[in-house]
Image 1 (cartoon, rainbow, N blue to C red):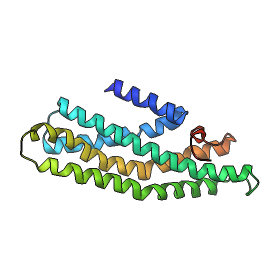
Image 2 (cartoon, rainbow, N blue to C red):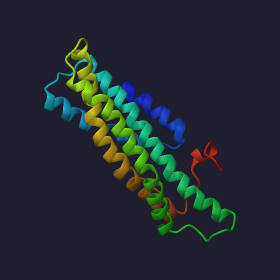
Image 3 (tube, rainbow, N blue to C red):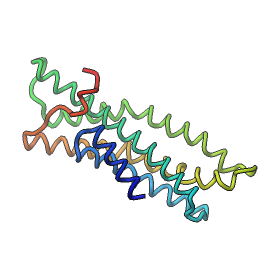
Length: 187
């Protein structure tokens, strides 16, 4: 598992091009882990290879939604910063960071809820199955179900708060700049 976390972090760094932001996105993994572990405990499953496969798949989904949330948040803030550079508005202030965070998070709310609901709709029937292979599929699906719920809460609530906090600190230090991810984001 440590190798999986290291690989995820390296990939996040290549995506965000910033260690701090990669760490913020990686925080969705422990939150996903919490929900997965609770559901595994409640259902009485042992930690087996199938459970670990479920956790690895869960980590991928959690990181993906975390990255998309950060992209939306950056897109909203970078748009304001680009307008300032073009002379269409005044300098960036704390209220701009709050507004950009809320705007980006709200734009990501429905897609995130739809992603979680779609995954849950697909996974819950596996938990009720009794046929051939159910003994292997249930331990794979269980951590994903529990982790998707806690990961959704993290990505929708905690990630925007951490993003806002990071950008506030950057603004106060005078180091606030457009995202390094902006190189591949639409201008």
